[in-house]
Length: 308
Image: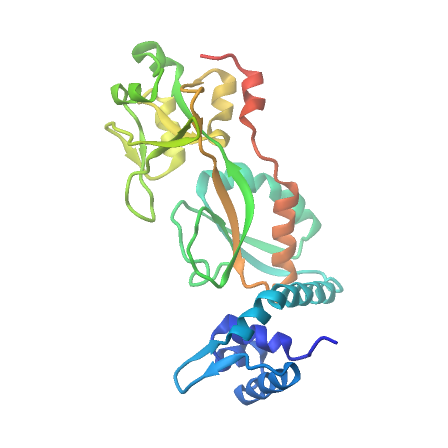
């Protein structure tokens, strides 16, 4: 028999104290304390070390949370979703995502969702700046390592495959790099992280070993769409996602260079708050994205265009 106090125990662990768990559950701190005491009595173990200023898990508490925490949350999710499915999901859903990636990968997936759930109002923010989705009031965040907040759940969504590109006109004038060392002879368009403020290195993998190249040139941007535009104007060479550059490669405007060097893919995640009591509209939105997204595969593009 499953103890009814398990969900209270999970809430205390996730919130770190009785009072915060009580607010989440909509009950008093005394009721939370009583529920935990009853669970400890039922299991005949001590779950928390209690003091005036701290509350920490015992070894038995850690073991119980490890074995049951995710199961209880999944069960609560399913019960909540089943209950809310009886009503048409509605309300505003705020989603933050990177600019160019959001427009090219996420936005095309949304008309079908909006048609299926017309009462859900999507409020989308497109910007490369990585923010705190909790503080900014967003329901869902899409990006690469949005933050390290332990209260957020991260779900694999998409792998961006970077490619090194130059315009056809640039290659005609300056030639194409044949090795990584050749990049020092070219104008490399750098991307500056909005989070750290630093230029990002270009990461390659040679014989299983990661090689980092510091891009040198006279142009740095903080937006990948700007990097693509600069390549189109013949300013230099850039490393961008295949999603941003595929149409230019297929049309012959861009040429891929350094194809023999493997570039590490970048994992894009979907972030959302704790699984407990996740609204149906949020769950449906996330499931729709994950189910319907189709990654751009470099090998498919290689079949469509000629090599440089």
